[in-house]
Image 1 (tube, one colour):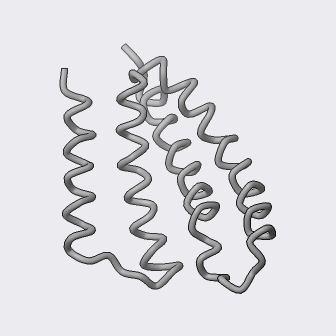
Image 2 (cartoon, helix red, strand yellow; image 1 turned 180 degrees about the vertical axis):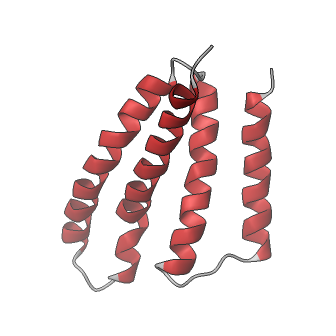
Length: 115
């Protein structure tokens, strides 16, 4: 039986990696006047730190979770991180239909964990 730490560490690492990923993918939207090449290079630099957390999260997490479970978990974490980022950093609050769509994705992820 996996310990609590073995179950939680991948979740924490995926949470951290998704913070970096969200900034790499969407952070530049606040700086639309920046040259695209500069934005691409900056995003790659940020993504490096995402991978430094995401790869161990999946490697270590695979001892406890299946690959589909890790992916489902990652999707829900991504949505939560993105919702906070969108509202707080970009100033774009989510509307009811965004929340409804995210909820359906969360239900899909939940189904992956049923045995």
